[in-house]
Amino acid sequence: MPTTTSTPAARTTLRSAETPAHAMPSVASVDLTPFEAVNFQVDRAARALGMPEHQQVGLKTPFREVMVELPLHRDDGTMRTYHGYRIQHDNSRGPMKGGLRFHPRVELDEVRALASLMTWKTAVVDVPFGGAKGGIDCDPAELTRKELEYLTRLFVGRIHMLIGENEDIPAPDVNTNPQVMAWIVDEYAKYRGFTPGIVTGKPLPLGGLVGRLSATGRGVAIVTERAAPDVGVTLRGARVAVQGFGNVGSWAAHSLAALGARVVAVSDVHGGVFHGDGLDVEALMAESRSTGSIIGFDGVERISNEELLALDVDILVPAALEEAIRADNAGDVRARMVVEGANAPVTPSADDMLMTRGITVVPDILANAGGVTGSYFEWVQNTQRFRWSAQRVEDELVRTLTTAYGDVRAAAREFDCSLRTGAFILAVRRVAEATELRGG
Ligand code: NAD
Image (cartoon, rainbow, N blue to C red; front, side, top):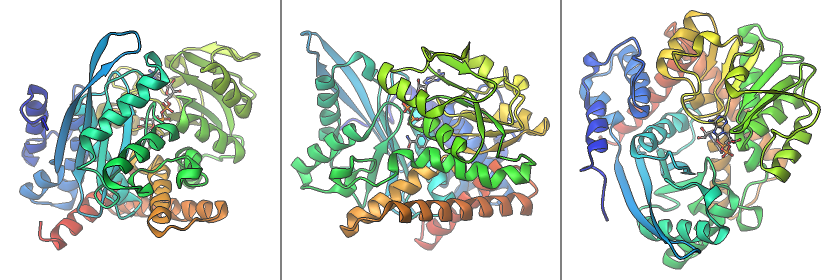
């Protein structure tokens, strides 16, 4: 099986993982790669903890990286080769865990960054997992259902020996869903027997969790509810804008509206919609399900994604892709708090700019950790062959995220730093402790 360590991209980014701590800038450069951007935060936390350089390098370097070739015979008779990735970042605290993304932009450095973020995220919420991430550089919108199923099964055939319910457990991410997880369960069963705990985010009849679909977005709302009073924002009546109306964005909007917030704008890849009195989120979800977008929704004003980010709101939730808020547009943000529904939607330089302007950023590894927390509950049930009630899932989600927010806030206060640096300090400390105890 080919690994990626010989590719130029791999060399470039591995160097960044090995960059000595003292050589890492304390001020964020605008052109960090995604993996460098995550490591910038890890280094900042490690410096605050006084961690020796060799330990920092060890914590940043991925455990295993795999890239596989996926030749697909298209239904129209043509042939196209895709690339599949699985980066296993760290397993010191338990089996590695992280989503699978199907998107044309998927590439090694991005997957590495996302895998690393999973290590820190699972540590922030203190679930017994490490971090991993994977994906295929395909656009599912261009594939038939049959082609997508074939590609998914081909990928599992190439990596099944490296994943497992006690080794590495994939889950849905951008453009993947419970159906894709069901194909993975079925394909994996052909090699290793029926193992529902091999993936999370499954359909209910295959051992899925009641509430997993909404868990990430619900988690965004729970964390926002905890953080808002500390920022001086009253959630009831607060104006909210959400960029990205997929799994995370739509459920975040839905859950925030249920807590009394006024969701005034949402967007997807095609553009955004705005209504100053508040949008009907459930109707927008129905519109998105039936037409594939919210852009044709009636009785609203149309806005661009850039305009959405610059709206005069209390809470901005970027819940689409990475690097939505960068040095060139961070100055336009007028929200009082930015809650990262997506992974890495704010670049390090933009993050520092927002902090300087007094805008609180609730970081991804805390704000969207409801997803992996729900996945943990699903995995626990699968491995115990037991099913929890919806109420128990909700109670445990609230308890876990409330504790995590308290832990992050305490670290931020102890080290007099942002919530992001506090979250990384907490996570790096927990991962380092586990690594040391295991003799690593
Ligand atoms: P999704 O595929 O369900 O939805 C993505 C949404 O973003 C869609 O509405 C899409 O139209 C929109 N979008 C894509 N490109 C855009 C652009 N350039 N501008 C504006 N909107 C754009 O994906 P998802 O699962 O909701 O994931 C969104 C983000 O949340 C990703 O960063 C993902 O890694 C992260 N995340 C997801 C989960 C999960 O459980 N699904 C958990 C944690 C974090």
